[in-house]
Image (cartoon, rainbow, N blue to C red):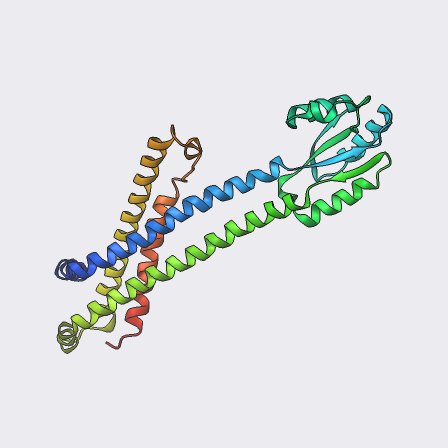
Length: 289
């Protein structure tokens, strides 16, 4: 083992330019991946919050009694998909309209009576917000006596669902792409080093060295390249994240909300080490000793 480690350290020093280029390539690839992960992760957090803001509006009959309102409220509470119900009378509906719509006074000018209907704002549990689920719930609510109409905004539900799915697909695609790049870099580097040491390997074979003994330094070297590349990539990401967040937070408020899970830093280094080992195993497995 001591001989193997000495061989690895000598090889790293002697072939420093090849190794530096490999480390730089791995570091830059992983740096790009982590930056994109940071953006995708925060985008995913934002899309996860969208269902919490989503609600179904249940319009009630104009002259509905308070007793019927209570019955509808109780029926809705029985549904497990619903998390919150808020009732707005005709007067409250008018107040909300005036608050949210610019120029509401001009629109309502000349009307003798309140044209708005009482309604209920129904919030669903975020995990069930999908086009099929919301459509089914809306159809069920429409059948309740005293309900005039149900509005849930089909386009909004579709957008929420597509945004969530898109962020997941983009994240998986980028992860696989960069992983393949890191494996390929380790594979190519180990293969180059293997052929550059062909004479040394021939001497070791004549001295009776086993295939495992000859291949071990290359495997360890691939792991080291992956680890060092991962450390640099993760370090650059952390430095950029904290620098950007604390320098631009006052200018761009949205930057302050960016989140980088601390677990990503050590995990990315471990992942790089693993990918370096995979690249090395593939390289030494394809070469005849």
